Image (cartoon, rainbow, N blue to C red; front, side, top):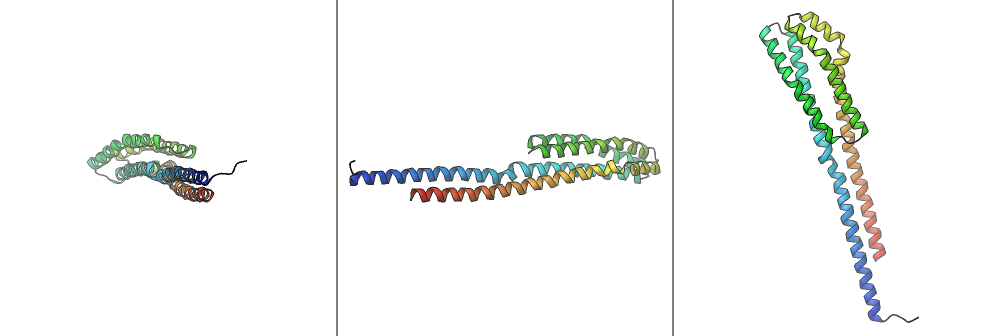
Length: 197
């Protein structure tokens, strides 16, 4: 077997260095992309999801406040105005929940969205009679109807709270995933650099 010349040894050395640098660059760029994707999950998915849920919560809270005003106020004009304001918000909440669909992260997220929709439907099943009684000036009967259906009414807030809490879990998971990928990228880069060296 012939021995390598000094020129061939230098050529192999340069070639090995170039392959190592190429590998290191490729691995580093790929892992940086993975870290960015994992870290950006919060901006791309979780924050818009939380914003949509918060909008739905705000509007549903206004509907509930207006409904309470209707039950408490004895002035017919104000009761009618509160009913109009609440009624105008109802389709907007449905639209807002529809906007959430493209942002569904996983099966649990979908289950919680379905739960929020069911809770909203349950609330809407109680509200018309509350409104009718309040508009007729039967405030005590309206309050009794509200008390009889308190579980359905309170279920709306609980469903939205669960959904918001889960989106926080998703944000924490994305942050943990980004840290894990960064550690893995560092180890991979050090391994490639060590082998090249």
